[in-house]
Amino acid sequence: MTYSVRLENIIDDAIDSKIVSFFIPEKHRAVFHFVPGQYITLWVEIKGIEVRRCYSICSDNDLLNAKGIVQIGCRMIPNGLMSNWFNHEVKPGDKVKLMPPMGHFQILKKKALHRVGFASGSGITPILAIMRETLQSNALSKFTLVYANKHTTTVMFKEALQDLKDRYLDRLTLIYIFSRQQQDNDLFQGRINKEKVNAFLQSLLPLGSLDEVFICGPNDMIESVANTLKEHHLPEDRVRVEYFVAGYTPLALQSKTDESIIQGAQPTNRLKLHLNGKIFELPMLAHETVLQCALRAGLDIPFSCQSGVCCTCMAKLLTGSVDLLKNFTLQKKELSLNYILTCQAVARSDSIEVSFDDR
Ligand code: FES
Image (cartoon, rainbow, N blue to C red; front, side, top):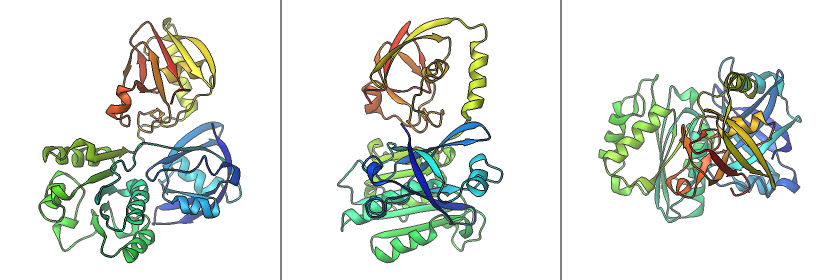
C-alpha cells in the first residue's frame, strides 16, 4: 500500500548527496512511525517506467511527531535514474508515493551499552538514526562510529554528526577514514577491510566492548567486517548488516525478462496466493519466482529492490517448499517461521501457498 505525501524540500548535504524531506499528513503519521534503521520505499514514474527505490530514514520520530517530517539521505550518482529525477524532475510541493517504513536493520539488544557502527559512504544513513537513538535513549550508552569516505567533501551528514558529537562529547566517538585524502595515521587512511578491522580491535575497539555492531556499505566491505568479527568469535547475534540494493531493475525492464521466461514455458507448479483477504490460484512457470508469477497475473503485490535485499516483498509460506535464490535480509528466526522473500522464492514442490496477509 502506498501513501500520497508532499515532497517538502531537497537540500544539499555533502558534495554529492542530498537530504530529502517528506511531509506526512496527520492522518498517516501513525503508519509512518519507524524504528531507527528502517527505510521507506519511494514509487515514482520516470519516462513511463515505474521505479521503486528504498531509502534509509535519517531523521527521528520526534521530527515526525512535531512537524510531520520524514527525511532520507540520497547519494547522487552522475546520470543515475533517481539522481536525475531528484535534480531535474521533482520539486518541493509535488506529491509522491511512499510505502510505510520497513526493514530489520535495527537495535535488538535493548540493554547494549556500547554500540559500534561501520559505515561506508551512504551506508551512514540508517546508522545515523541508530546512533541518535542509542545516545538519546540511555544516558549510560556509548556509540563508536567508524565511517569511511573518499574525502571530507563526501562525508554525508557532517553537520548532524558534529551536532551529536557536541551534545554527547564523552559518549560518542567518531572515527573517519579517507581513501583519497592523506592522513597522518595509516589507521585512518584507505578503506574498511579485514586489516583495518583487526587494527581497530587491537587498539580502539576491544572485542569484549562490542555489545552490538551495525554494518552498512558496499557488499565487500560488509562481508570483510562481518567475517573478521566472526573470526574473532564475536557472537553472531551481536552483528547486524544492511546491504545496499544492487542490480536493481526497473519494473518495465523486469517485465521484458518475464516475457522471455514465458515464451514456450509451461506451468509446472501451482501458487495459491493470499493477498488483501482474497485468495488467487495461479499457474507458475518453471524457474519463475513468486513475485514474477504474481506480477504476470496483474496482482499489485509489495516489492522494491527485487534483489533479496530490502524485505519489502516478504510473505509467509503456508504450505509447500521453495528455494530462495538470494537472501541478504531475512534472519534465521524469520526463516524458521517460514517467511520468504517472494522476489527470490522459486517453487520446489508441485504446489505452494503463500500469504501476504500473515506478515
Ligand atoms: S523486493 Fe526487496 S527483497 Fe524482495
